[in-house]
Length: 100
Image (cartoon, rainbow, N blue to C red; front, side, top):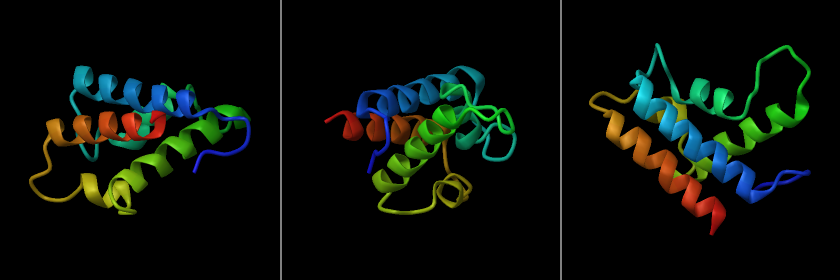
């Protein structure tokens, strides 16, 4: 659930941008994981004190987990045989769910 001053549209936009980043940069579960793309899409840099960006990143991560049936996204993306297309499609589907 999206809370605080976050809008569903903002969270959906972060998820969609993360999908685009991973599509362009080539997703890799260990070298270019989902959380890194979500953080970049939210303009979150750990340690900078930008609580709005951090909250947006966390909300996007939670929305992806909900889309995956409450499965932890990191475990999901590291499952053997996972493809870039599956990752990108999951992020885009989560974005649609959040904005619906």
